[in-house]
Length: 215
Image (cartoon, rainbow, N blue to C red; front, side, top):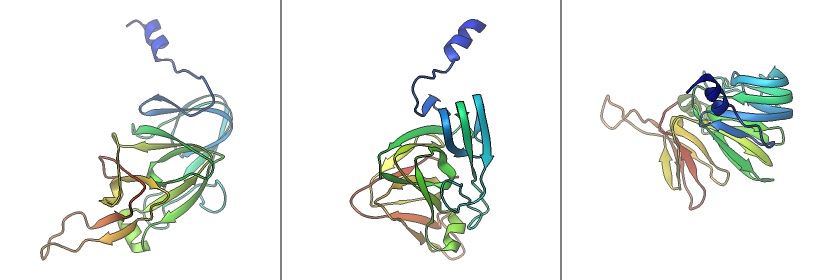
């Protein structure tokens, strides 16, 4: 195709005031106020937008860190202004969710891409500190109303409990589930399975989202 056709067919559409998937790996956010996004995820913006980095998990929409339990830090930043913001993360696929008032979902800290300022959140760790450090088990409990965007390596699959999952492949789970962490013993003397830490989801309701990739 020629340059004019390429520019015309590749241009994004800015209709509406909701999160928009520009493609499978790029999220568009119409901005009139504030939104919280993963630090470093901005790839472009139009209009007048300022960014404020956050480095604490204390109180309100101030960000979250995994440094307390692992070497992986996942800070967020607040984008404020009027314009249109584009965010992405390492070519991971983007999923958008609409949370009703009081509706909640728990998402792995590494997989939260963006959420509206109307969404409240709480930081949780699964299991003991030592177990969390082994599996990087810090999650973000998001409560609506508002939109949330998560990112996944490849196409995720949604499973129903009871199910065991690899913590590094677990993206999110419904708020009515409370997973526990188990440590697998070696199956032979001097050998391990390579799957020493597992998350166990029990119950008869809810869902668990896993991706075909270990973070």
